[in-house]
Image (tube, rainbow, N blue to C red):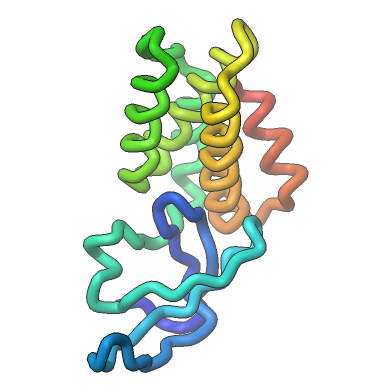
Length: 157
């Protein structure tokens, strides 16, 4: 169980901080929820405490793992389907894992694909979301500013 003040990652949303734990009545059932502030995306979300593990909520990576993420960003591009629709589905599934190394590989592959041939509108939105998820966690892990993280990510791709 997390506590107020913990930095966490909520897959598909990114990293944030638990600002409160509240009890709410939902469909006649009382449940506890984490109130999570996601500053990068300027959102507040509620996550059911008893379902947080199944949703993939986890702690932000330790600062010592940042280099591992940067190594993935500068690594080899993975082969992806030529069909944009299939590629979109596969990358969405990969982002849902919540694994920062998988998220970094999605960002790397999509950025490099976009440089070779412009991505579809849907894939551009997916790339933007993936980059937000990645960068928000790096901000919390390393204590960086948004500009520093964005520059770091772009440099390594």
